[in-house]
Length: 157
Image 1 (cartoon, rainbow, N blue to C red):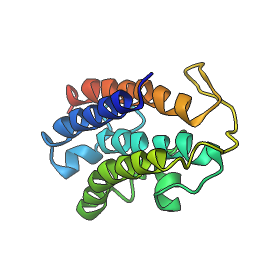
Image 2: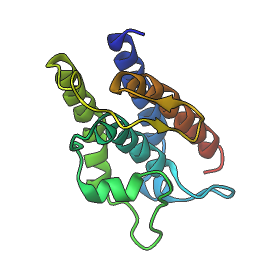
Image 3: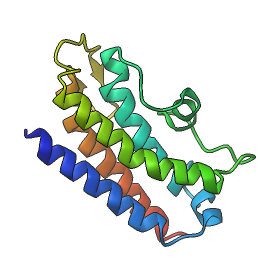
């Protein structure tokens, strides 16, 4: 699979997510719809963080995001109802959605991932990832899944 195509699809998926986010107030973005355990903004943040963990973390490299964000948006986490995401935190996520992909593309072009020892990981989807390239290609599926969740959520807000 072509890296540039995968990068392009990932960018488009994030723009599609942002199109959903743009239709709601910050209060609505923080609301957890009935039948769900998270919210629109969590799904968006989770997509950003998961790409970092799959592509950098499992390669033994530091992520480009703060550890607090990793804890907040990693698999198994849920929104803190007592501490909704603020406007500035939301704006930071919007920036990270772009800058993390830009940095990943630059790191890929520089060969950063060429000699890493990747820790094989079987996703909850059932796919076993054995390299950064496989992780990045799988990430398209993962972000598409969360985009679909966001599409379902928006009908309930």
